Length: 124
Image 1: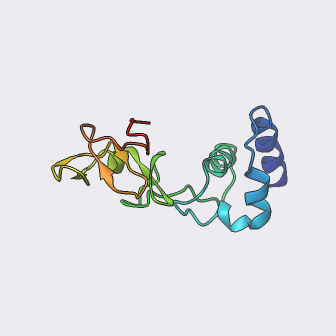
Image 2 (image 1 turned 90 degrees about the horizontal axis):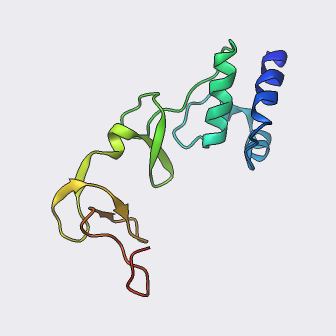
């Protein structure tokens, strides 16, 4: 396991993640609990370790459907898969059920036709 961790660490040093060390020092359970809040850098480390034969690691699960696919979106503090990110929901502005394209500063879902505006009235 130590050689696997060292080899995966060397691979990731080519493109280091800024907070990876901080997250890992906070607790190694992040490598095994599979939470959807797992930072992307930790997910990449877990994938590298599993690819090198490590056992006991857990890939993060989607915060909505629970699958262990790549997590590309977010709903609050949890990461979600692209399938769940593409699901339709009522727009916080027009009320129509459409694909969520934006979230305003209050976390309300917005469709592509109703983008959130900044305090100056412009779309970010």
